[in-house]
Image (cartoon, rainbow, N blue to C red; front, side, top):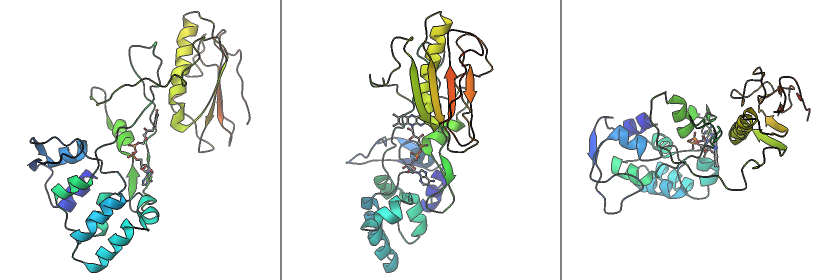
Length: 277
Ligand SMILES: Cc1cc2nc3c(=O)[nH]c(=O)nc-3n(C[C@H](O)[C@H](O)[C@H](O)COP(=O)(O)OP(=O)(O)OC[C@H]3O[C@@H](n4cnc5c(N)ncnc54)[C@H](O)[C@@H]3O)c2cc1C
């Protein structure tokens, strides 16, 4: 998207620019020389669907009456059906309406600041050597019908490599969404897709407790897969890890949710369960 925007603005990626503004927008640092590609990558959200206000601001930038009229319609009653539902972004519109005259300054005004994405920590607090995230990469044919869509943060996280640094803040979950303090309390968890992430952390906390000799109650996770043959690529533990505290069963019944059942007080085999929903 950055490359598309740079091309549409008729600029070069390595062009340096300094933003001066009496009304600073979002996170763009003022008075600091930045490369155009850096500016568009880090300080604005190119993936945000264009709001009615943004579409309305584009209309007067074109000298082409039919395109102007269509943009005015898209900023009004047709916005929901033709912009929001198709996920059209500023760059999509600039490519569709080639007569719009937009420079970098206006593009920066029209683009929102990047929106933080939230991810659940999917490891246990007791495992202090590292923090795990379980991320579902959002990708597929674009709703606009033009090309492919890739989620900004999830595809970025897919690209990071060991040693890379990412910017993140850690916040505490609400009190209501925690595993029971008493590890002996039985728990049933129900999740689908990346919703498994926090439960992975809960299960791992129970595994740590079991390994430390604590009493741990039955722990069952019902996991919904979109595809009948789907499975989770990041189960909380390999079912083949046959030791006390490890998961003892995973069951996949075609067309039904997968069930992961764990018993923590005994070794491999005991308490293995499969449930058909
Ligand atoms: C409390 C909380 C916890 C979360 N925990 C996790 C977690 O542990 N793991 C996890 O993977 N996610 C988690 N999420 C979701 C996560 O925050 C992001 O929303 C998700 O990763 C998508 O972000 P993205 O930047 O990749 O996509 P974005 O770039 O933000 O794209 C999403 C937007 O694109 C639109 N869109 C979707 N598909 C298309 C398409 N085909 N064409 C056009 N537009 C489209 C959507 O309508 C949406 O507006 C959590 C969310 C919350 C609120």
